[in-house]
Amino acid sequence: MEKITRRFELKYDLEWEYGVEIGKIREDLDIIEEMGATHVDIESDSSYDSSYVIINVISERVETDRECLARAEAVKNRFDIIKKREMDQLERLKLKYDK
Image 1 (spheres, rainbow, N blue to C red):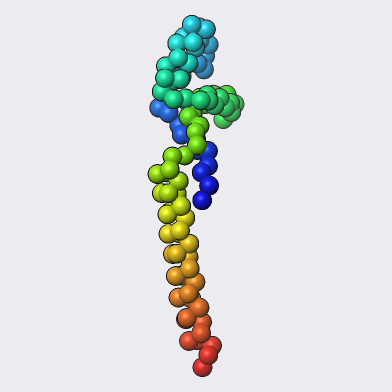
Image 2 (cartoon, rainbow, N blue to C red):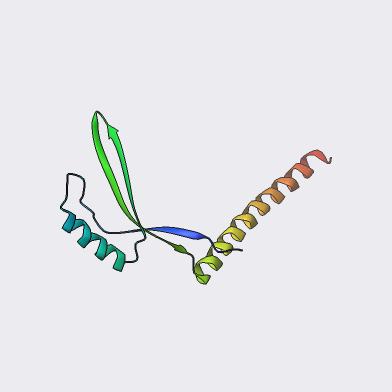
């Protein structure tokens, strides 16, 4: 299974919603870069005629060997469960209709 690029949200509050000094932005960017951040996602939306902003700090990287193996195992386990469920159903249908 090929490795994929994964996105992880980092826990850091960027309180930039209502205006922020450039110096504070630079300070925050330095801190989150040290934490491994690669992106800042900024989304705006509105609800009940009020607008708001959601800001998330994201680290995007290629998964590790361990993460790739864990994902491959999880996919295999899901397929095994599906296969068992389908085989059980097939057996029930054979019993029902092969009389």
